[in-house]
Length: 554
Image (spheres, rainbow, N blue to C red):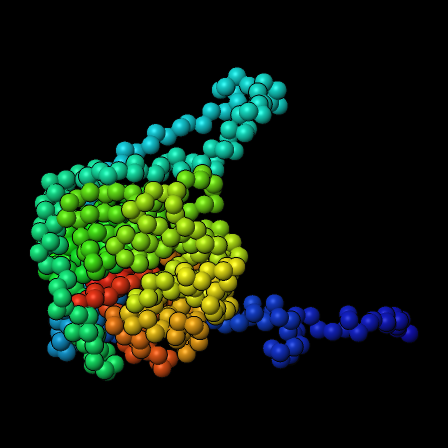
């Protein structure tokens, strides 16, 4: 009888056939395995495509009847695939030539090269500064000192005090206030081309003396008429490359046209007390731009009086009011602060007549200066609760009325005959500090510029101020740009012009109706024109940026 061996009991895991994959869907795989599988499938597809391309290249090579091996400059035979590439390139070149695309490409490339030409520098002669010596840093080991600093000597109290004072007065020592004068204008010229500058001043003296404002000349001849006619005249003004000139080396704080009609003469005030003179269209080494240094700090205000057009008056943060005689070539100090306080400075001036000025200063002071008397007899008025008087504008027909703008956000109207208890006749509150105030030439309106992003046209009847129109205008120029100061178009109460932060860069002309009527712009205007001016007797506008350049539209 055969012996039967008992069968062993096996589990389901052991009984399952080996190397047999259970069918599943790709969605059931983990994310990592699914990505790996997709990459493998993509590699297989690329391999199949390569094989198909090789097969097509072989068929094309065998079908070519006159196919001959192509050689390169090194006498090496090209492969079949390289021959195919060369044939495709030649065929595409013939197609592009037949369509005229290659010719259009050459024309476009030449235009791009012309537009990318480096702009030609025009302006003042650049000063050649010698490179400063580089101080090598020496380690403590080289100085025979221990790392713990035991051998280092501590500064004394006297040395610490001197260091603190030097940090406060470093700028004043680097830029000291020039002598009061009178002194020749050429003494304040530091560039190399002094011969050209003397020739320019000679021509300027002749033009100022022979072509000053005549009794028959009026701003209404250019800027009079209806608003539409003035805007139409502005639209005809344009800018040329020769009219973009660098006049001062740094930021421009003020600008004014000289009223002569024989020349287009622009006067600008720079950051470190430079008085720039630009004779537009003059052909010389510096393109008619010359820079003098009658002050040591920013020149905030420039003016040329109609009664004495050969005199240019300038007010600076260095605490002085000076007069530059263009005909005689003399610079003279008319008034200067005598106190040496760090927070004492002058901001703005308004000329009442030939000898009298109203000067806005720090600590809420308005100074009435008469150049015929000594400095000790200057009258002082306290306004705006000791806040700095940023701008001041006198009434054009009634000199005893004047308006002020301050950091406290008020535009105030004052009367010199009734200046009791330092209270104004009337005030208009703004949201933030005032950066510009100006009377119109009729005296019936004021234009104010405030850091609350509004321009305000304010009517004035010499007793009260009333806001006629608020114009939304972005005035946040930032730290490195001069603040905007809107101005009236000469002889008009209904049009004002001001710089703008908008792109493309422009100078805007707004109406009393609150509408933007025109803006001066062009491909040559690539920066913000912070301060602007219009010529009183010619259709000419000057916009100045913070790198010292002047853009002139005519």
